[in-house]
Length: 193
Image (tube, rainbow, N blue to C red; front, side, top):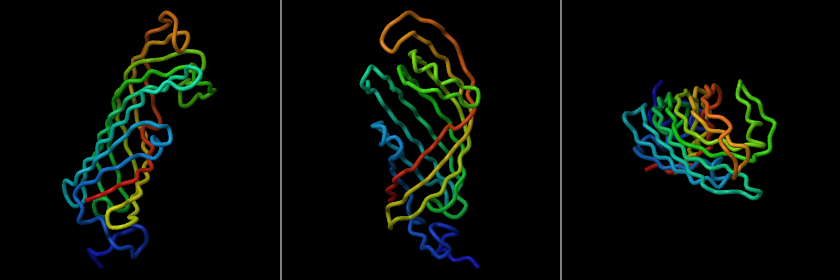
């Protein structure tokens, strides 16, 4: 039985479909907010089940002890919603690109062929491009507010320069790297209209 007033999983079996009449949304990723990274996303409806989302973030801060976590990122994504746009389950295909300048970040992380521990004693700067697939779910909190969770995996190609410390030194290495792994993680607070 089809009932356009209720969504297949938008917050429960009989949850009212509060976002179905919305055609545009703006959002902020709470993960980026937690790191003081300026971020903004926008999403527009293309049809009842398709939307186009784009997000961007920017962080140019130098942290204490000359730690660097500078970057900018742009990430457009096409989304297919299993029920109706802006509510319930969705799958996405995203592109990503940006630049980074990381250094003096103490860690011992080695993950899927990428050695992030090099950032403990070095500075690495460069650019990247990539693509990935994602799964997400959006809960309606009210008529205009949603909470959206999303995780994505994919590939990124990066070209980088490595220096011996966060603020000094001659070029140690110029190289490239092929990254496979998580490419998107979001808990978005969404306002739709």
